[in-house]
Length: 235
Image (cartoon, rainbow, N blue to C red; front, side, top):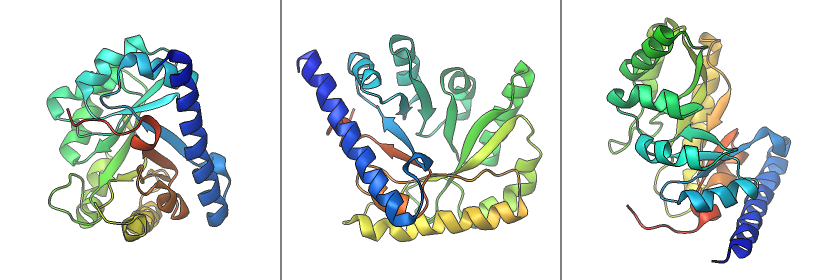
């Protein structure tokens, strides 16, 4: 696609997504600026991401550390979130590449990140804790009772800033069918914050297929790829 056409297409896609977010916020009785849009950019080349940043998509989400490492120097002006799984042996590289890690899915991983941040003398590093709300054996994350039991261990990690929770919704035939997952994350957040004040209120939930429903149920971060960049082949 010609550069000018690419830029205009990305602007239109961004406006359409933000419009749906605004409508969902109105239905939920809150302002549109209470929701952060993360443009999930896995497999999107750096050249196209530069156009995305120019179009206003300045917060990018990547699934793999090595892909973001290659892209970040080539895409100035963007912030970067890790939204995919993180192996402990890539923890240091992730901390050096991303501004926030959304996918902390175990106490062991949290301890590894905390130790690196502390040893390096950095300020507390922001993370989200990944919840497997639906107890789906095919998904990563704490199941609810595991996270409740882990609060004391996590509270001892002073080099991490626990900004909130993240979940990946079920693969369902309709966006409406995903609503129980989003309600579940919201209610878990409320219950946990009542006993653990260090946990922040962020709720990262909702993707291209169901982000409007997620916003209706309280999402503060949505992770949208296909609705912005179009369908992409599986790498």
